[in-house]
Image (cartoon, rainbow, N blue to C red):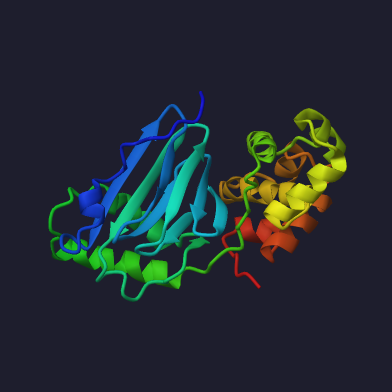
Length: 267
């Protein structure tokens, strides 16, 4: 199904921009098609995640692919746009300005703690009314866990040229594709030199490095789910697990096995 720009926001814009109201509001949505939300901003801070798949996030000059099993923090009044790769199944928590006082002032992606993973689903069931004493305490726990989250190096600049964006989207759908620069150039109507030069200029990476980081992002939720490293490596187009392990450690600072065990203390 083609990507669509969705005009209906996840939360009423009036609530997202309200200075009063509950310290925390939650919403979630699953839909069979892809979803795109145009660039916008709001007074409330936002914690968001995907139950499955990948989300593209443009936050100012930062571009990310957010894998399932991870969360992104967007501070208040920070312009951002979101789009899913494939079907959309995601959630968001919105925090009042007062609740954001001690939270990071720049966007970040991090692996949620066990405590945060348990607390978020409970908060998503709240009605949006004023929080009672128990809910206020849980909201405080969620805020503390956001503040304690360790940022992960998951930025992946997206090209703006429409031909390069088609390549980026194709790789996001099939990261195991091992076509060379010459192969992608032939498919996109560019010379290999022009493609390599434009890709470097628009993403600050070579196409090879960009694809390697993409594969790492795709691997993260699979590692957290306990899938064997060898299975993941071979499915992503690597000839040997050792090649994948070397790339993963370079990008994340830890081995895939250590990351999958939840010990991603980075650099």
